[in-house]
Image 1 (cartoon, rainbow, N blue to C red):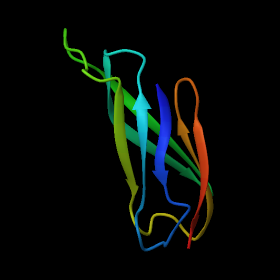
Image 2 (cartoon, helix red, strand yellow; image 1 turned 135 degrees about the vertical axis):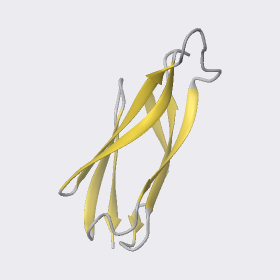
Image 3 (tube, rainbow, N blue to C red; image 1 turned 180 degrees about the vertical axis):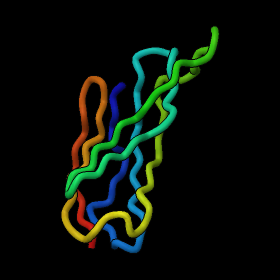
Length: 99
């Protein structure tokens, strides 16, 4: 899958959730986005989208899906973070500040 960040704030207060969304483009109709895992180590965040195979003969009608991700308030300490959204063909990176 390929990901394109739609919106991601460049800064957020610690007491607020950090929210971003992205468009996920899949190569075929046989899978659907199922869950997202967030890995956090010091100032690095890695986001991995998991997929599930559509059951039986069913197929997804669309190849593009928009996902909204929210990191709860008070999860990240103040500082500058680098986030990586991992895709099968390419990854997207950006930085943001927690105030």
